[in-house]
Image (cartoon, rainbow, N blue to C red; front, side, top):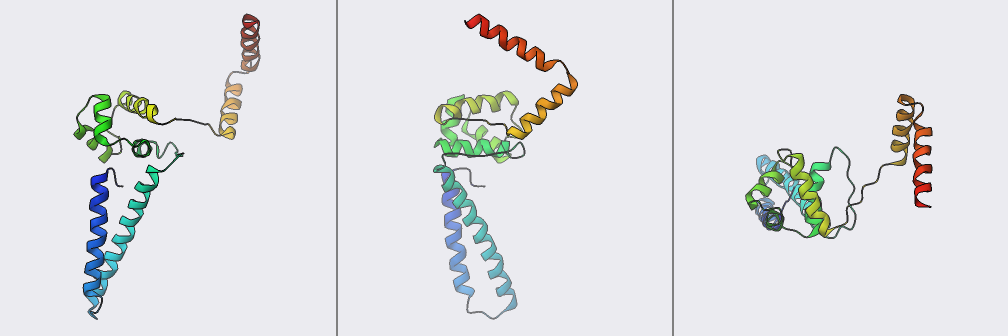
Length: 167
């Protein structure tokens, strides 16, 4: 994954270099050269996909993520917000290298408090909207009702009390 504009530039130059090398070997009939060309073509495809992902994030108006991709999504949010690693580091008062280390490891080494701090900072630049899938939320509610059979009546009582207090 490309994390910043410097890496974007390196990837773009790498694609160009690999294409030039493929052109140099394209007339060869040697099996090893053919295998090398194939390997380089695969690498170009990978780099091209990463470049497109980085550029798409800069134009994104919505990002979706799951609990499995949450940590990677923090990077995506930073890129989508237009913040550089340096901007984020300054905003949360850490060294830029710390943000680079976090992102290199997809925030697995960051504390929960640090992740919340980063999300708060990013939410100043973009709107974070978290939605639970209705079916999952419904299933959770049904599970809660199974564990606490009188929960629905308690919720109704609290809602009624709040309504009366407002009136």
